[in-house]
Every structure is written in C-alpha cells, then in structure tokens.
Image 1 (tube, rainbow, N blue to C red):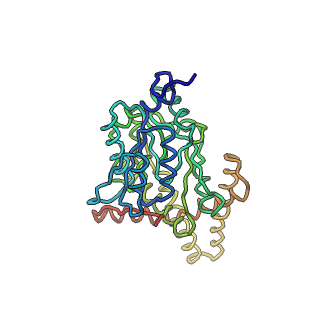
Image 2: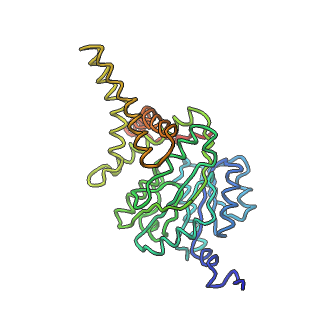
Image 3: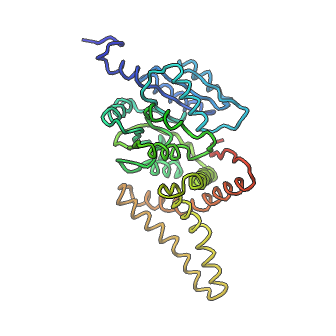
Length: 344
C-alpha cells in the first residue's frame, strides 16, 4: 500500500521536514541545472545563492522551485558568505530544520546520500558533520580532473575537516556561528576547527555523495587552484596555528621547505662548495616516487595515476607558495585578499 507523502511513516516525508539544502554558484550553467534537479527529487526545501551570475542561473533556479538569494554585490563574493546567506534564509523559512546539506552548484547529489547521511547523524548525537565520496564527473577527460578525483578520495572515519559538500547538523552550525565570511578559501576546515573545539565530531562515511564537474582543462587552472590552497593554508595557520590545534602549520611549513628553503640550500652550496651538491635536487623525483608508492597502498589507484598524483603534490608547492606569499603580503599591507578563481 502506498503511503501518503505527508505520512509520518513515510521516510521521504521525514526527510522533507528535517533536511534542507543550500547550493551556491556563479555562472554554472547546465552544471547548476543538474545540481538543482538532483535536489528536487529528494527534498523541496532548497535555497540557491547566486554570486552575480550573468548566464541565466537565477531564472533556472527559480524555474526549479528553489528560493533564490542574490548575494550583495557591495562586498566581495566568497563561498563562505554565500553559504551563510543561504543557510540563514533556509532557517528563516524553515526554522524546524535539523540538518542542512551544503553543496556547490557544479555538483550533483547522489539520490541515496541524504538518507544514508541522515541515519548516520541520527545514530551519533555528537556528530556535527558527515561527508561522503565526492567524485569527478569526467576524470578521464583531463589529467587535472583526474587529480581532483584522487584528491577527493580521503580516508573513511573520523576526520579533522570536510569539504564544500557535507550534511551538517543545524544545531552545531548555529552554535559556532557558521562559516567565517571573511575567508576567500579554506572556510570549511576553519569551520571544522571551531566545531571540534566545541565538542562536535566530523566523519567521512563510505557512501557516494556528489558528482563534481571541475571542468579543468588548462595548466593555469590547476596552478590557480593550488595557489588558492596555499593562501588557505597560510590564513588557516595564522588563525588557528597555535598549539594544540596547529591548524595548517605542517602544510605551510612543507610548502616553504619544498618550494624555497631546499632549492636555496642546494643552489648556495653548489656555488660556495661544489656543483655536485646540485644532486640534492634529485630529492624531488624521489619524493614523487615515495608519494606515488604511498598512494598506491592507501587508495589502490593504478601506478600511472599514483605517479601523476605524486607529481601534482610536488609541483603544487610552487603555486601554493605564491598563495602563501600573497596572503602575508596583503596582511602586512592591511589589505583584504581578492578571490582566487580557477574557473572563468
């Protein structure tokens, strides 16, 4: 016998009452349409936050029944500001919500994700955030998409942070004050620092969550994405780098050592002592091999994919270092950093 949609025993009805979604984007086109279509089949409570799109994204969202929030253009656009605005609007419309699914407008939500993630949160009252497997839609199209797909495959279990796609407990999100609206990158790990400090846990479960369309086809896009990561590490360390958290300190040190410190040591000793010390640069291909071997054991990717991953990890140190330099330069000058985008 079919249960009515508003039946208390109907699991879909239960999801409708307890879960809402916030999608954010700018000029995502058909990617946004896929995103909103995937949400419409699961839940009706959807807010889309637009950051100045000129491609018809707003009308596409309205046609699909989403509540649209146009982000104020008087200040710079950031994902953190957009997510805060979306969640605030969602809770204004539906104050009874228990969980909110955040996702980027270039992602498609898996049909089974909400039920699985909601059950996980229900079973663990101190769990504030749950995330799953984000995959690239077209990993075979470019090596940059493939790199992204491998980066999304993080360990299962308790985690220190989540990404842009995650199901969050509203109580936890509200208690810590949401995302930091001033961050141009790294807002999710920074939020998770405050959540963990408040006693909440973050967990990644073994379940399909979203399909992401990076649409990354150029080297400069990969470099810009790495630069943004470096900026996020620098700002994260500046905010929460003190013990015991040491947020992003290890990552920032690694960047400086590989990109600046070690090359300078090798070059100076080559000039002052012997050109044979240039052999010290062989540590880079060695580190690529070590990273690839670790990836092979940890994720089971092919050797070609693992070597690509290792090469990306090492090569990314230079654009990441530029991101670090940009952050500290702007901070010393008292300027706010501008958004670093890899999509145009």
